[in-house]
Length: 166
Image (tube, rainbow, N blue to C red; front, top):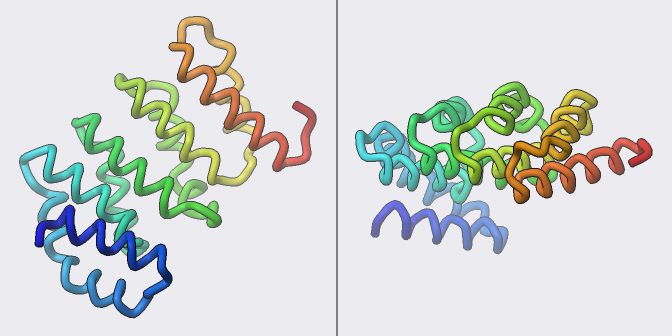
């Protein structure tokens, strides 16, 4: 079985609530995830960082943070998908990575990566600085339309959650 296949199986186990089986699978694949995350091949790193979320590896947050700083947009995107997955219903992860997510959302060279960072911010607390950043991106005519649309939608959701007026 490959790491990709194991991660897909882990995703299924997590979604079905099979915690014991998921924990066993995590144990079996822990070293492989770590090794793949350190690979020289960006494709292997991308699979590893995506697997962190699929395995629900909450103890690999520092490794995940490194993925957000990787040179490869594919790796950064995979790490962001895992951040988004691990932060559903629990804003702590996004809140702890907020400055890095702000930087990615506003300055990353890859538009898809920037949009993913914005989507991750949706799972964090409704912090004023995040809403201001997103409003700025939404109103910036120099930004691509899809990024502006995503920023506008996430800012509106965060304002609504905060109980503020749109």
